[in-house]
Length: 299
Length: 226
Image (tube, rainbow over all chains, first blue to last red; front, top):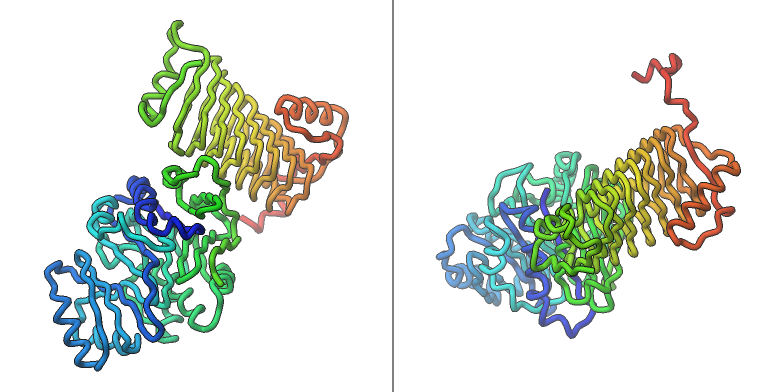
């Protein structure tokens, strides 16, 4: 089960409506995933030399200001934080690896749910509508968004186990299906220095793509290698800072549908999620083919 | 023609009207705002005309008997699943497993059909104006699958007595599916189906595929495979 949705805006005039357009898409997939929900939104890119982190803490009263002060003093860097429910968007000019290391040592209860230049990730247990409203996304503007509604089958219903999984470098991946070789892939990636936060199979697929992109691959190349090395049933929807992609395994039995107009490209597990978008009646609609990579936006 | 607004009535409300077999019921309906919802116009059991204005979700027209359903849009997974008789036509593309297990009637997809089109078909005739995806006509038992475009991998895998006509390229044939001679009776049947579907295609450009019938009986030479 689970529902995945993605929306990439081709028309810049629609950027201000991204959150509003995406909301009914995610909510429509509630029946496929009532346990937890999460979204990645690409917006407000930071300046060169800065990194944006999406952080989360189970305690909504956690003092992010204290973390901001301590991090700035310890690493002698600029830090700005913005609290959003139990999440926080932190922007800093310190090196990404140093910040991660500092957080793991000094605030181990803080979860790093995403990092990059544009990406912001919000995820929580509970019905998708509640999750979406909690993070004030309805009026959010941005370029593209990816979302997941989860019916847990493979690991616990926790915020950490909620999707999407972002493993750095602005990459975010949502997944409908199950992977069969994630343990061996996880071991291999750990040897490459990648750290995992959960036992979840989807996190491995995200980490694999991040590793490929950090090694110099384009999103398309990373996905081409992924088709060869990732085994299982899957429909992936993937976002990068300027790219949006969809790929299915060679058997292609996990549902997926795509629609495109001059203004937007959308994917969903079921078309009823896309039906809410303006212009969907006139959109070109098709089922993505197996082992075929669909990419938009990547330079 | 009576109008039914699916946004207002919901799928159950619309289907309840269509299932009403009383004599006062209209003979034709137009369904607006389908919004990609599932199971629209499922289980119909009377001669009537249904026009759906927009894209439908999974299982549209499933188990249909006697009714004629036209979808002006795209159809999701399992279109006309287990149809018994009647006619269903879709103006756009159809997702996977269109016409699955269907026993009778005519299913016409003007655009492309995705994977597993006609899987386990048991007597339905399916005409696809575009191409079909992989594993189409898998374990197809009877009826005809007409493909005006190309066919994906493993066409007709483990096919029984269904007949497949393809105008374009076949990516690969499935186990026990072979090309067969196009005899006059096949040419006549194909022509009849193309005419019935109103799709423009020259019947002489098609090739016929069917079962080599080597899987029908146990072959002792294959014993090692078990």
